[in-house]
Image 1 (cartoon, rainbow, N blue to C red):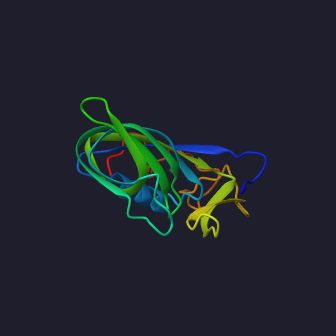
Image 2: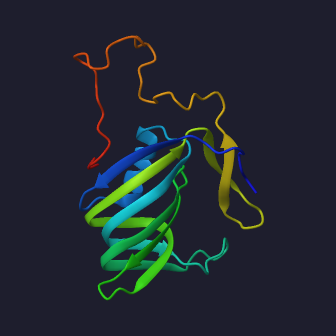
Length: 180
């Protein structure tokens, strides 16, 4: 088991993706842009027109069990971790309410919207290492070394800590309702 004890502080990022965007690529771009070290999906609602999923019966030596979907699907669940080698599972419902799910390989093209809430465990760092037992790169959870969980990752390290945050010229970032 890979765990860092004691829990962690949490930062939340809310993002809305518009039609035509590829959901996995947009999430990976968010992770890089915001320098997230232990990100995970809290919530996602929306719809897609395409999806490429690996099914549960795949193994490290037989990863060919892939399902490519095309049509209109509601996202009824999206869960997982978003470090550079993201590990996401999705459940989609078709027009009749039938569901299908699997490991996200990509190709999740947003239909109308994808509204996501992404959490980051501020005291942790997620990496992946090859596991000889499963044959897949598996999650490794470690304490984040030398971090200040209350620090703003977008803050200017040379900024005056006593400066007025409402002063002219201060950049205020809106992360809710962001269309990438």
